[in-house]
Length: 199
Image (cartoon, rainbow, N blue to C red; front, side, top):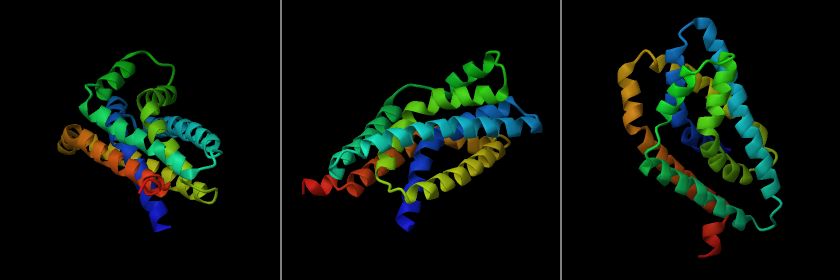
């Protein structure tokens, strides 16, 4: 159980450091207290969609008979982390552009922003991670994800009022993400027995 909780925390953190900055931008745009609930609903629906798709893909991949072969999926987070760190994409600017366009609702805006900005990263992390789980682990992981989503919503709302912390995440967020992606990729390679298979 401690290993499962630890790997779940790692998977969540690796996909949500950038998302924390995105939520800060969203909360800065919508400052009405009533909007907070709508943002949270949009966040849950957007993240839930990505998690659901990842689970379905992982389920089909689990049909591969040799588990160590699945471990090669651990290379994806490592490559994604390196690409994100050395790339020049600015998700913050992308979010600001989307928020600047007229939208039908706050919920729809947050769903679209979540899927558009987090989709590839989340799938790259969650699919390999979910392939390491058994059926009994999934409810625990989903429950933890829900708790963590509540926490990151609260945290991003608080940081909106603390510029110094916001600057810290803007400055070091990419480095933290890189390190967590690499650690998670290595964990998946080890958990699936891929590295051990060649030693």
